[in-house]
Image 1 (cartoon, rainbow, N blue to C red):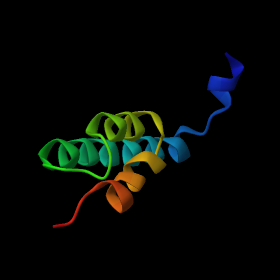
Image 2: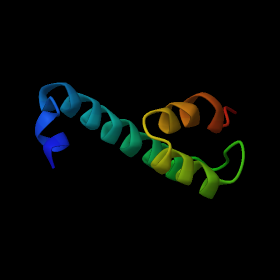
Image 3: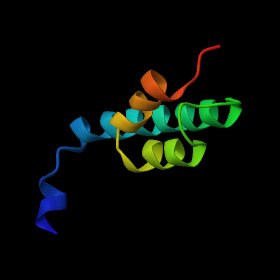
Length: 66
């Protein structure tokens, strides 16, 4: 429990907020997208479980343009 007391929440909170915002935008975008590069379920799981990098990967590689 001492580890939780040692965390500098002023530094961690913006990262958590950024992660949540990116995740929400990526999930909404994925839901609205008719086709993605690969199965939608795969992208949803990547967005949710690959912290911070998952949504970025979706925006760079997952969306189909066209």
